[in-house]
Image (cartoon, rainbow, N blue to C red; front, top):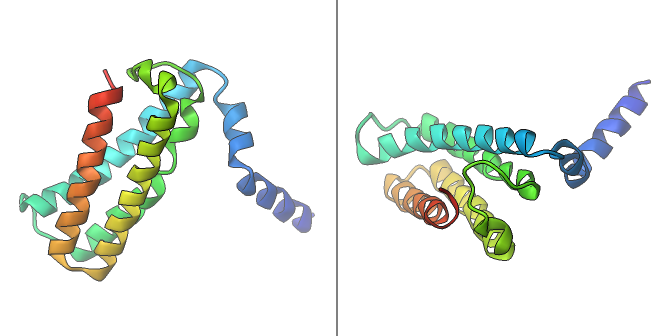
Length: 145
């Protein structure tokens, strides 16, 4: 029984595209998932942003925690763009290659932010966060109403 459970878990984890395709079969589910993922990204991003701007005390462990979360969270919303809807502009699906490229860059920027956070140099964190935030804003400007 335990081996069957482990095997099922391994199969499920190793085939996210199949799972995503079945989960996001209508606009409502797709939009809710995307919005939830982006809300979590926004929360973690805002906390680091407040520390980088000096609005709150810089806490190394908190930056690491938020950057680790962003490295994971920025990989989540993209599968939910298989279905149109929400405040996303139709241009996403008209120019999917560009959108997907921006999504990959966003995730890569999050990984760079994570690396900078782990190193602990506030200047490197500020620089990595700036690149991450600029990419986020540029995509919003082009693809979100």
